[in-house]
Image (cartoon, rainbow, N blue to C red):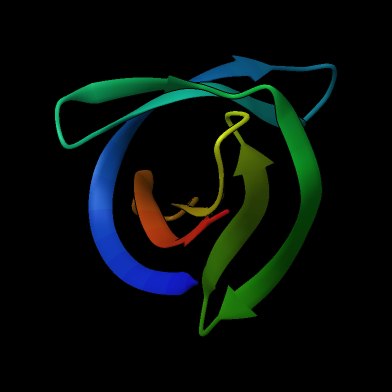
Length: 82
């Protein structure tokens, strides 16, 4: 069941090669989630802001993370619990 969250979160990433950003973990509600797999990623523009979207799993649920490159803020957009 898809649940909208829209909360700012802290994300650990690996940069590179080039401009690539790969999230490896995130904190949500005082719990650290280790990302096992990035299942899909895409980018879009909202006005002048570049948004990087990542669908990731920690092995128990599917999460959509969004990185706003202009404001340098990560948001947990939604959770789909299996």
